[in-house]
Image 1 (cartoon, rainbow, N blue to C red):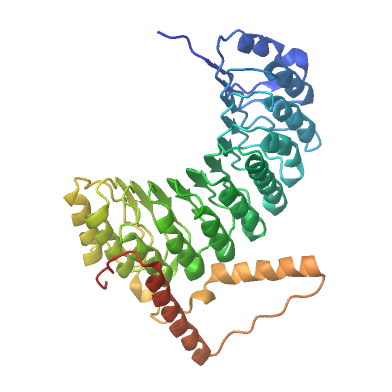
Image 2: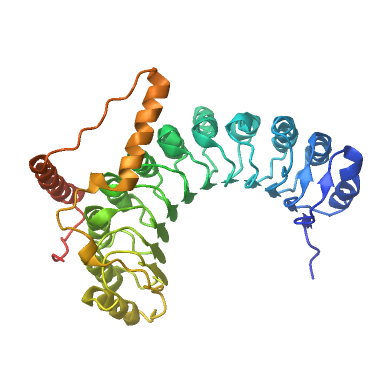
Length: 420
């Protein structure tokens, strides 16, 4: 049996303040022949300990994975930048490194700068995990700009980017940083997995991300769970779907697609532009049976490998014909168990057919946040939004329907699906 090339003290709850505190563990780490992976998470490291760790890693020629998640619990915010710099700067000198995981370190936007030298100077890492770091808009902009600068430097040197995976969820990135992330994604071009769940990104930001990721034709995983799409964001994703023929997982759960947004996404999916899909997660999108019927058609015609389907929390009844159509379609491929529970479906009677999508509380809250941000930036009160009269709302609904039809006409992906 081959000797392990992993060194781990993960989850031991150690408080390592000084170089002498961490020395016994570094000695053990150095003794691992051909070391490929380290896991230091679930412990708390001070500045001196991180400096010693950095020195021990400097120039390593075999290390591939550095898991440094959750290493600053209980540390002062003033300690973190220097500690982070000590480790990240050392990793620049590790040419074999493929993955850096700094998740669950609450360093916030103020402590994002120490990561920048690694992101801009290390040329071969391919996996970046920054989940639950409290980056906010400011930190998000810092990281995204560093990734963009890295891509531009690689291009200038005639080199291709190795970046393949970016996981940056639960960071409140919001709309303020989304366009810069979109630029960075497009510039790298070879991304395979992008997860940006629970970031408070609204429809304009979703639109920017979808457009940026359209430049990543090898994308296999797209996860934007728990951000706010409505119709505008949904249409942007619908337009991007044909750019990802290798897509295996699409997670748009808790994204408030709404009926028109659901139709926009499902209509394109039903045309078979993502034939390799294995997991589709669309819970709590507030779309109705028309979208579900289109999904059933897509399963029948194009998705023999779909083994995970989540539709709970949308409009309809578990006994509706559209649900039975989905079950029959899955059964036809031998995946009867693919459909998740449907115990929280929404009563269609609760929704008016002519509901104005922009009146949803989540959207109103987003607009209020935008106004507050505008006041901060401009120093002037933002204009108060006046609710449209019923006739104006009807005109908007009609225009949205026309625009949706126009979108599908522009996609031009072959035969149009039968009407739901």
